[in-house]
Length: 364
Image 1 (cartoon, rainbow, N blue to C red):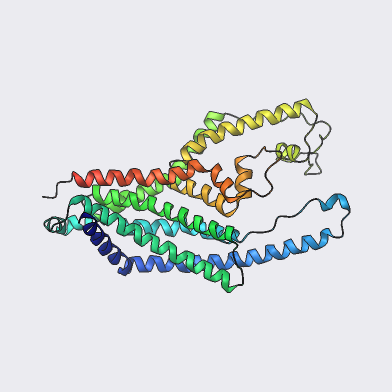
Image 2: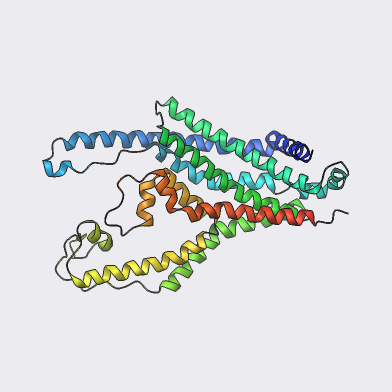
């Protein structure tokens, strides 16, 4: 059966990956650094929890008007924020290391022609190689999450059902990020004649979409939005604006403060706030479009929504005067659905290009 042949190829590729020295070294480095970051995150979580308990104790001494305000209890998902930054670096390297020579190595050793002489078809080979690589990356991600959960339990931090679901979503999003660069590496391995060239092409794309594209997007956003509006002349301090220096200057966060702390009746400041809001929306329109093409930026956006939904909500709606106090995971993910879709479309496009190229490739 075709499925049996496909699974046989995938099983062989998976076995070759997890037993290779290159995979073991990079995976070991990823797990060690992730473990250290999780340990630091647990310490920060415990410190935040102690500060939260102290705030609750001090609130008992306040008058009634202040008792309506409640500090936010820290979530254990904060532990995974530091893990996110290491995943974008070492995780991307691991994904590239798995995929950059999957096909080019076969062409260099001339084993691809011998492989096709067996009762196996081209689509089964390329799909099996892709499934084997995906399985290896899934194994690495599952191992990293297992270590993270074990460390949480070791420090007597037990996730709730919602937090455990968020951890699984974080793992799925991280795996989607790894698949993005695995797909790029697999495509370059199919296009290039040699593994060295495939690695160079992959690293160029990695650098372009991770660094150059967001930078050019920010430059385009600045050019499109133009210069920011000038604040009105300094007069009597409007309600809700905080003076930050003895020289009479105002805080650079005047707009946000005037919104959050009650605003001002000054029509000039109202007009300035509206102009600044329009200016920021113009900037975000261009930067968001360019960021959709960058797996790193999409991963950061979605991972923040998972690990810190309140921060994600504030970033998405900075001028919301009545933000949701405790945004849920589903609501936070709903705000970043375009980034989630981009994380799916990006590797899918490269996998499709790999499939077409391999099926039309001349192996003589």
